[in-house]
Length: 615
Image (cartoon, rainbow, N blue to C red; front, side):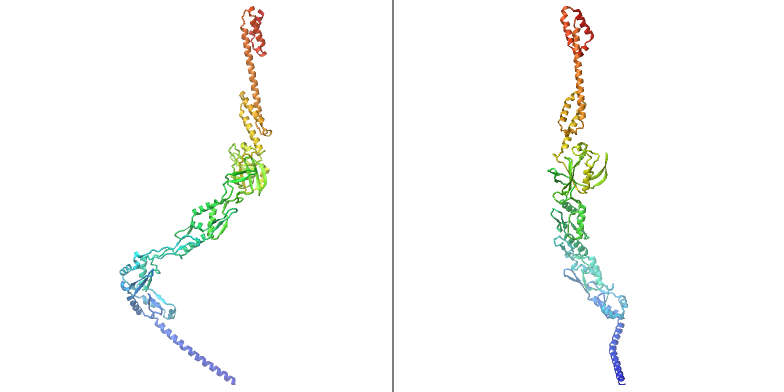
């Protein structure tokens, strides 16, 4: 029982404590509620705390109170003008006949206000701006503005745009924009009117945008983007590297001379300047179309002129690569972009792999990695028909098997085709039975290097596109076969010059025979017209025989005629005194050859016989 009594006493105490607590809390809350409601009712007809209308504080004011405040404010209104160069001026409301104009706008604003939300307005002030609350004399305002010091054009300074100036190794210099004091009169007048309508206490010309400010500012994104681009382009460098050559560095000092920025701050690269740089740079690497020396297989050094073999920078592709490198903005080490490459950057760019073609000797050598793969006689372009094979340094264009070579007057299938100078190339020539010597001078190709099948095959199997082909002439290296052919050809030409054989050809034929006899046995083998010579000799002998015969016959006729004349001169009547004459006639006749005797007429013989009988 005792325990129950104690629990009941504790419960009673707790209830009493709660009642006291509720009283303590409830009284202040109630007071606050009353205050809230009173003010809520008050702000049904008055503007809430922290409310301004056209910069006039109207907190806790009724509409009439607002009008009184605005009227009072207008009567002593002065607007401070904050100008550049730390200057200030002011406009007084009295100078422009400023006065308030009231209509229903204030009442409309108050109607929109929620009085029960007055606590919210304490943390979120309300700023209202209404038009036509203030009136003023615009002509007087114009006069006031015209007399302001800031409107004196003689004191104005022009604004200047921010500019990107000279390039330096640390980046481009920047000239910040300059803010001048030249005023946009129309904008200034309109904004002043707006400020007066709102009864602004202070008017900052800069903040209100009344000055003719720079159009380009240093902090502008387009300006900074252009600056960043210029610095990115000029703070990188391209290092051109090639074996055996000093590095060539393209850096900002050169790149900066190509760059320009237009009015819209677009950075551009002068294409003409870039092209000129690439063209000049390429000269350091280009070797194609130039001259080069070769230590020939004959122990002599020759200079080979021209030809398209060698390094050649692709100017257009190199320009594009430079632009890409600039955009990347990172240092680069590389070779130029080539449209054509060679074996090496050394003194002789053909290296130790090449085909050596000696047109004089009509002989070629193919070296690969310094080792001789094959050498062979060949037949080059026909000199007599102006198809001579051009000398120079070239590169194998490509290689193909079982090709058909075509021209205006020929169509030749070949097994191995290796062009190196347009339509001129190396190939097998199965239609030829012999190569080398001086065949090319009179029976050469259309310009190609005709090779024996085996030599062409070996070269084809070991050569690739781009391999250098060095073609030259070297007087003094003519082969013995060539010398023999030339000597034989000279004899052939001499034989041909005999032409139609006459008795007057005797000297020419004898000379040609001497030339032929002077040839070596190996050279005689190349004479093609020997049968013409022997035929000419036979024809001459026949003519000479016929001439001798004719001469003999002519003499017999003369002798016979003389004897006939002697006989016929004898008198018709013979006497002893005529014995000597008759004997002389007989002796003359007896001295004639048989041929001549036959030509003496019978009448003369009869007269001689009659004379002898008469004696």
